[in-house]
Image (cartoon, rainbow, N blue to C red; front, side, top):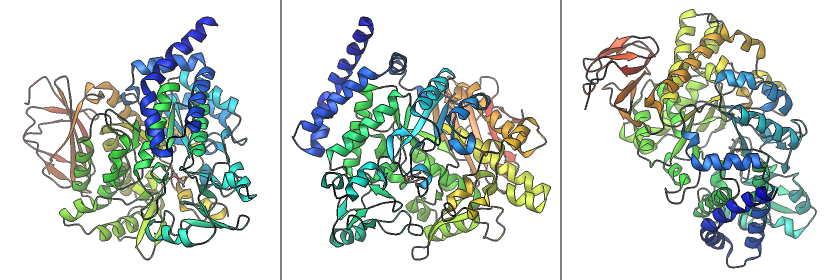
Length: 624
Ligand code: GLC
């Protein structure tokens, strides 16, 4: 016991002492010189440290010694809804062997904290940040699950929806009862004067399904700021109680064994009149404060930012090498560019965009993905598009119509999300398989179309797996699940087309995953192959050199990975036709890791429609 206490005291005070000055400086930057809230925060940090289990403290130490653990090539993520995949947390625990079979090391569960029965935006309207929703189980179940997962080498990621609470959260209820202290935790205004000023500069997230940035509260007789749905009230981070309380909830979840927090909608945290209320400098101060707090109390825990912003805004969320913020960000711009490249059969923008990402410092790590629970928002780099002679609005309209299946010749089956007739903006929904053409091919019964659709699926996945960062699969993709239109019959879901790709996991189909004659088997083994090849070569080590390469063909994307004198050339043909490529710089023979096909890149070779190759250099010829 005494030894345990020494251990706790031995590490926390050191960690805290190293960070105290910066933490206090940043806190004062937001909240001025008063010490009360800062003292309270510091006391609570020490209490959470004291309450942290020895097992988690051991993990903290291991991770401090290996702080880049999440960059490892063995990392493979999956994201899922607990109820749709398994039912509840206990049943999910029983499915761990399946996750192991998939090779998963990182499990992101969609929101599981207490939420209203209906109108909960898929759990993103949280009623209690300290309590698992009884539909999924209890806090004890969560703790047991994280422990079992950890033993199996799987880290659990949970959403931390810190921008807003549900309007039925206790704070919101007290605010509605007229308690001024709790009204100050939100942004409430008695009349339209300030809301109207905000509306002049703040864009809308859901112009179609939940227009405007304010909701009228009849009970309070006030307008309340809401960036998302009317039942999601934005928190007032000018009030230090709000930041403190949210940090305590995060530490409580960390002590239950959560290893990664997905900072939901983090760019929206700070509001300022006359601005877009996105990406303001104070947001970065808040993230940095959170990072410092975690580094003191639970240094094994990392932050993943959900920053769905223009490409130029992303990098700031990593902070700097000296003062890092998020450990990971969703690679949203690559995701969008992959889908854009596939529809347009043009890989030029994708290359430019990946060049930009590869030029970022070494602390900028991305989580790569194709689909998640949200829509695909067509945020391409408009300046780059213009440089390439592409009209940004025209391209966006083409893309969402294409993935809606409305563009002539489109193979995709999907739906629009938040179409805005004035700006002509819209986003796209659908599962990977349906957007790639599997659904349409099954409907028409055309075998050749099905073959092309599956090639598209694997082309996207292979390109995504080859990038810097680690891949994450949206649950259901590993067996090629299609869109689920049943949401239209559910009054609670029908107004949100993102439900199209939030279907129940089909365990009946999953049983076919080892049968290579089935779609499930082809997709499962295709992804398994990518994962196995990724871990089998040093070229995927986290310190490998990665750069794009000019394939001298606008339909083809190419990437070079190098480590310890070995070279891997990844080539992806986004065209429905055969394409010629030539890589003059690459001398000698290369072998495709999947098919064994031999090519000589320097002489040029032909790619089949939608073909991808991971070319390993044969022998040890030097190229440079
Ligand atoms: C994030 C979530 C999305 C949710 C929104 C509001 O963007 O991914 O599903 O609607 O935040 O919380």
